[in-house]
Amino acid sequence: MTAPPAEAGSWLRTPERGTAFALTLLIAICRLLGRGVTRLLIAPIVLYFVACAPQARRASRDYLRRLGLPHGFRAVFGHFLRFAHVTLDRLFFVLGKRHGFAITRTGKGHLAALKQQRRGALLIGAHLGSFEAMRAMATEESLPLNIVGYFKNARLVNGILEKLNPSLAARVINVERNMAFMLALKERIDAGEMVALLADRVGLGDRVVEVELFGAPALLPAGPYWLAASLRCPVYLTFGLFHEPNRYDLYCEPFAERIELARGARDSEARVWAQRYAQRLEHYCRLAPDNWFNFYPVWKVPA
Image 1 (spheres, one colour):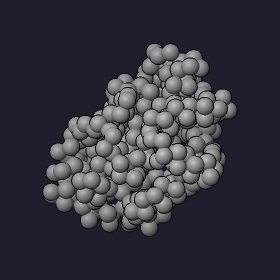
Image 2 (cartoon, one colour):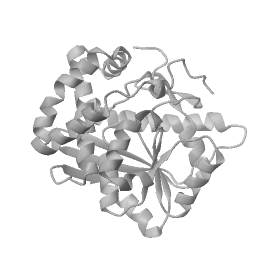
Image 3 (cartoon, one colour):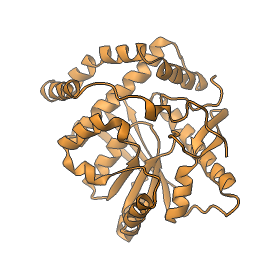
Image 4 (cartoon, helix red, strand yellow):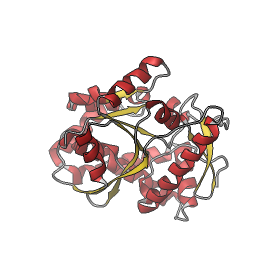
């Protein structure tokens, strides 16, 4: 098991930016003037953030360079602006206003079959595109979807979104390292519900494995595969890619009917699953290169 670098988990130590007033004002502007005008207004905010966030700027440049794309300041600004646009769209999905979006579905039948069979499943995604679009579609189709993650460092944003749509809180589970957390997940799986998490960012104290991503050694969390082995349920990969001006392409594909980690070889077998995940993550990143919003160190050595 590879030891994580000092930077791993730095995103959990990064203070949340912005204020409740600023976010409330942005929501009011969005409601009053609409999506198009608000997208124009947030550009200066993004420019300020890029200028004042050297670590995130370096991470974006490193990622774009590995894809063989332009990686100067203008390209990095465009990468952050895409993140801001997708984040803004979260508001519309939370409010149930998806009529202004074109949404395509690939692999929709997998989730429909799970619902019909009343089988629970683990859905693994990434900070790629919009998971909010996928959650909105799950709600519309009455698919019981629970989101697992580290939310304590984003209380402001999530708190405001929950005020706009109180039903979100019931389906959000903060990661904890205790038996109660595992039992809660197991109960939801056994009830035929879906549990979703993101597997492309290492958290504080996470077990990590080394994989090859875009041709270079990178560190990814091993936890999702240990969790899958404990839950003993089907595993699917899910991604929601954004394309201008308003299209979201949602993907769901089978990953494993069940993940099993043999006693004494769990670390090495978790690495095999993480490498399979890395290959699919790379595939979807190439479909929408500016959609990977993982602005933190991933590779062992910067490009």
